[in-house]
Length: 127
Image (tube, rainbow, N blue to C red; front, top):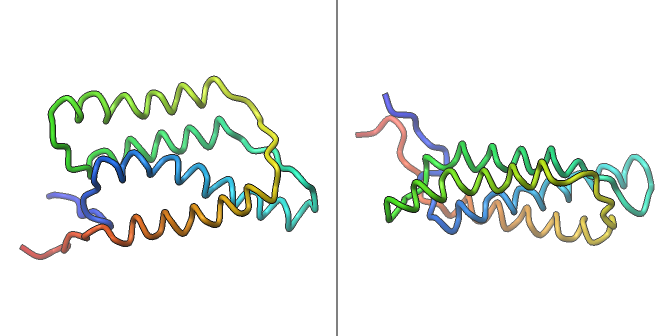
């Protein structure tokens, strides 16, 4: 039985853009929550945790990509998450100014929603 993807197949560029958009979007949400709760001017983000989640997203969505070449499937599908995990291992807490992160995060969430919404979805359960 084949699993049905919610958003259908992804293009290579869309798949490559998904983890950075996720990173910026989650940073924006964290900045909004920090602003509401702490009234500070900068926020400390768990960059290793965010990069680890982005790597997991890349691994899980790698099966939904329309790979045009065999080397892309081998090198990009497994190399890109490894690079994201290397970023997770090599970073520590980073202080980010709140206002720019709120703006970037809000804009990124709209881009991410548009990117995923315009994907041609597969029809689940139909032959």
